[in-house]
Image (cartoon, rainbow, N blue to C red; front, side, top):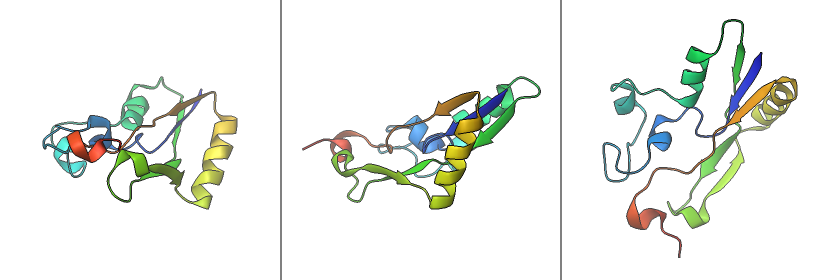
Length: 113
């Protein structure tokens, strides 16, 4: 079995956890969540995959939010190399897990106008 885990939230504890996690606007980084035995989607799938499974990971894209508001956020390619690797690995994968979402926020910072 060949598995590809990709997307900006596939390896981000702080964004997977969201607002009100350790802080009003969510954790500032993954480190405090790791200290509490946090595990990303990619890490969990690698740990739980059956023996013989090849698990590949790519970033896929990067969430950009220039002013911290959801309305101005976008998902842009991480790099040309990552885009090429993601496309190639996806074509060869038996299963692709795409982890999409948004940056952690609470209340006004994520409100749409």
